Length: 339
Image (cartoon, rainbow, N blue to C red; front, side, top):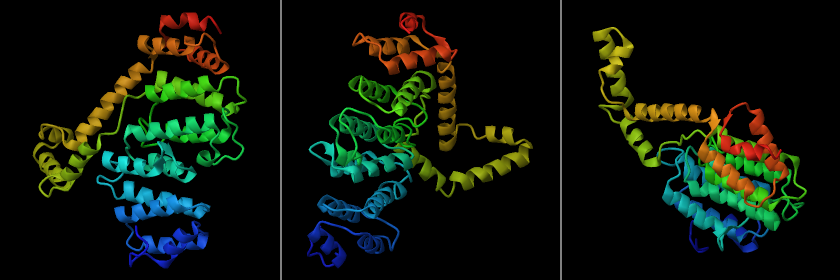
């Protein structure tokens, strides 16, 4: 946004001129941006312009920037909480430079979006994980905000950040690790074998890979377009919750049985179909979680055997699987014999 725009406050001009922001100036910005409780796309662009300019920042600015993006992309989304593909691509384009996230503020904002969204496109969570992996291997202090980071070593702060992304509500599957995530964690483990990693890294590795093999739910939140249909259904005067409740009451009066009354409506409502799909996915997950099947076993064999060595973390994973008492595919027997 041009500095000569009449509505740009003096505080913003000062920040852009000095390339620095203070806590007092952040308070002024809150008063400027929040009077209507909405962050428009033009205001979000201005936040990015300020952020891109800053050479000296403060914690208050990082908090404000993240809150602004959460408001713009999640709280104001339709349906609320669903980050659409267009918005996700806009945010990704604005927060990267030469294909990489610019700094700690952008990464923290991305992680908060994943934590607070009901759904976010897969490429956002995978990009966050890949950013942490790259920053660990390169020793990028600016992105991770860890001044003691040693290139190629995984410390407790990096483990905590990986855990936040892997189990974020809006990530690929917040209830279970998928194969893409498991592959990335295995890649990071391979790249840091022999490094002085934090003990918490071993725990995260075992938990993540065993989660993929044993807990993977198969359930994903309904896509944004489906939830928009539900949102429209809920707000239809002749249908939605009001209409549904009226039909239930009429059915109960005529039949005297709530469950029988619901049956007279025929096909599922939009909300019921989503709930039924989730129950089906959870039942499939329950059945799958009772064993490591042939496909999963072969994936694990290929991942462990590709370099001919058995790392400490991989051995710990095999010990965990054997101790789980679950049904393991026979193909895993040669691996188990190595521990």
